[in-house]
Image (tube, each protein chain N blue to C red):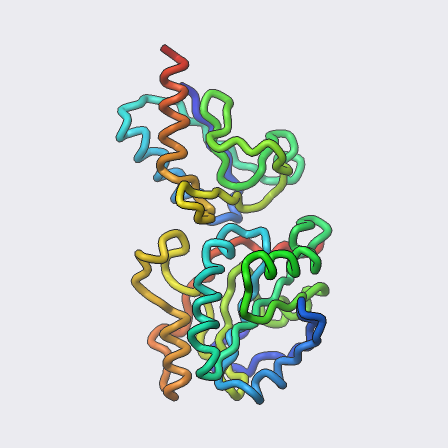
Amino acid sequence: MKIQFLFWEECPSHPDAWRRLHEVLDQLGVQAEIERIEITSEDDAQRWHFPGSPTILVNGQDIDPQPQSDARLTCRLYIHEDGRPSPLPSYATIRRAIEAARISER
Amino acid sequence: MLEIGQTAPDFTLPGIDGRTYRLQDLLHTHRAVAVIFSCNHCPYVQAWEDRMIALQREYDRRGVVLVAINPNDATRYPEDSFEGMQRRAQERGFNFLYLHDESQAVAHAYGAERTPHVYLLDSQGVLRYRGAIDDNYEHPEAVRHTYLRDAIEAVLSGTTPPVETTPAVGCTIKWRS
């Protein structure tokens, strides 16, 4: 499984998201190759279709796909299962994406 | 950056209700003014919005006003436009003032860096607390330190806030390039 962790340094949520990602991988016992990709410019954001920091791709798929999101340097908005807005993806969102990738790799 | 004990720069800014607000006027009619640099698009702001509404509801009758000021460059972040502010306030039922710092001069004068970034002023316009609203943007039920609330209580009782500064946690202000 390949995971790409895209982040913009100016948004402070990426260390917590990084920790959360590793916690879920540990809980699921999944070994994954994780690539950290720092987005540093609007050009980078466009090239990576980066809707905000952090963005996590599992086997190239966004863990929380949003069809009409603009690419730009900003903090990313996630809406959790209980409807609350957050700058972090929920554990459940990360877990769903990794489990789906694991199933598709079988 | 505006420091604890300094007098806050005055400002006059348009509000989403079509009126113009001057800080000096607000200070004359309130016991404390919480200036909060804010915006529409930032997820940190959105995560704290309900708590801002709750604080205004709770402290309105005690003479405290929350004044959210959006300084973001709307050319790069269109949802932070004045019209976007009006829409967001209506959708979310804002009960606090929401002003537009289109020139970004007020944010520069205060040294604001992030949204949300709180500056609590006493009735003399002196900065008494600067920083975050509380210590947990994601889980209101897990908050351990209610920095702004504690500082408001201290100002209302004429004492020094238990914590006077904390790091602002949020999105960087989107300055004009």
